[in-house]
Length: 494
Picture 1 (spheres, rainbow, N blue to C red):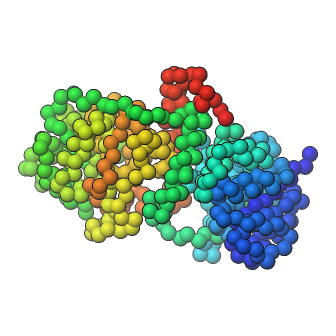
Picture 2: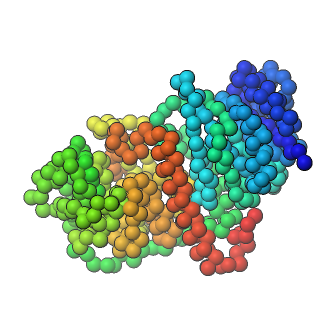
Picture 3: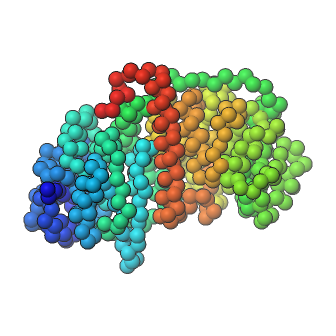
């Protein structure tokens, strides 16, 4: 039986939109073409839908009411794109073969006069980021849109598209076609390290609250929701020092001296030390560390193995006999805000009996001048829902500090990206996390940052790893919830 599809896309310009309508009409499998517009425009061979917000629940419901075909192609972004050869036919073929509720594909980017392949990653249980890159097109079975009409999200202005794909994910596996079926004209030419902080800008607050609402409901539906209050830590194990500043380092000759000094000058009511794990530096970093030996508070460790990432260096430091009761992060190219940072962090542990404390930081350039977006405080974290919302976003804040006995038990993944996020998710699934919303840390942005101006392959690798981390934690939470009460109605698949 021949399948067919209704196509919905956002108006960009008359020329580009008419060209796309004509491309859709070249396929015999396209039944109807709809263009989402803010006001009537001059286009032929298509229907126009007046909408206020492209990705609102109201818009998704309008689309759901109009779908008469087996499938619906939705392109609700603002980017100009074109169809590749046989794109419609291939989408339908794979959707039929897999019976997937949604399929999506790789694409080309047209930039600087060149076609550049842009692969995307496979979707999994933990792919909860609302900015997950599906490419320009999401191809849904009509049944998904019909099911969405019964979702209780009537007033959401921005999260309709997000809610729709989460609804699809609860109906089956979302399938990735590793073929370039589209060409997208790239309009946002900022490097990756600038784009990654878009969601913390003040203008995004309303949108982020909507995304949190949808994600929280999704977690409830799949049985992964955590409910407050969260378990407090018992901070009663004895240690010789109260806190250790942990600094993994490799080849940071330009920045390590500043980091060390910002740690050593801390004013506290308790004893502390600095544990620096020197991961076989060969640029002069080791010699700089030796200059500070006379200060008495610095423990300089060269690990006994050479296969360690940042996480592995943390394990070396935390398992060392000199490690204090609380292990506090200081990256080798960052600084504490002032001499009170360590005291503020330790006080927070005792105020709330936390297993982990997360601070807020100010973004600076190499010379410590503030740069956009300025202070990042992750106020999307709330005491009531922070551990749930943590599964939707890509980071939790800095600096991060841990109650050492719990960190020794969990251990840190031996990687150099995402190890901190993994710890935050794991600990938040079991224990209370304390938050400090005033800036107590300076995060220095420069060419040697691990997430500076990444290419597509590295961005995909980072995103895939964090999605795996979320998947592991989601599975753990689902299993724990089932053990607590296997008969909860909200844990049944909706």
